[in-house]
Length: 239
Image 1 (spheres, rainbow, N blue to C red):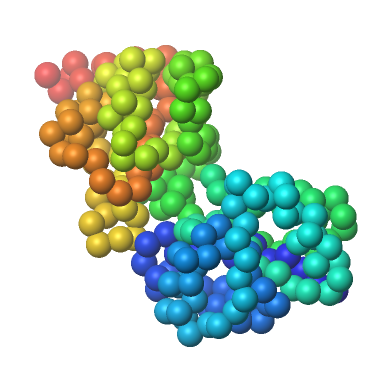
Image 2 (image 1 turned 90 degrees about the vertical axis):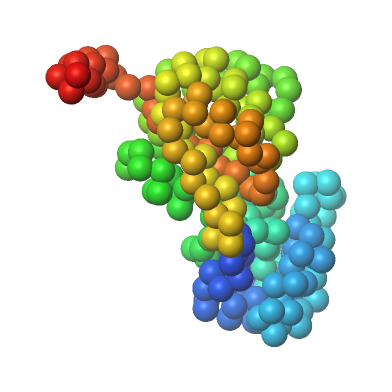
């Protein structure tokens, strides 16, 4: 029986693709790509020649039925995004849901995604965390950030370089300038960097250094009253 394969692709370093992902891309009948030009670079690097079709947020509602019918008709299909795991702040959910509803098997390969390395290297607890992806750009943004102020788990947010400073400022306003944060940019790439400190310190850093690249903002969860009291006692003893 044919399947829909969800295939993660590298978020920067092309060597981060798995052997299983390569084998899958070689074996399927065709590939759905968020941007065929971007995916063509990866396929060329891997020495794979395969027919590709565009599948992105602007056309997925129109094409999902056609794709599901193709799989039901016996054609294996791989879905890739420009970088990372499809469905994680990328197109993919609608197609997966349609296939599940139609009884079509979906096989998701493990692989690259920016949120996991970012939360692990932040130094904050990562046994439980809250992944927000991209916050609303306008409507509902302030309300969502206000709700996150009381979130006790580590918080992970994706952001564009053009809104990083504004996002940090909004977080500081809602959570307090002393809340700890790790701002990770360009994960797996040549200029990967993690800026750690308070929200105030991160704001100052990116005001002085123009934000460039892809960003993941990892914010420490709201400390419990007990933890806050213990920290104050430790600070007083240190003084």
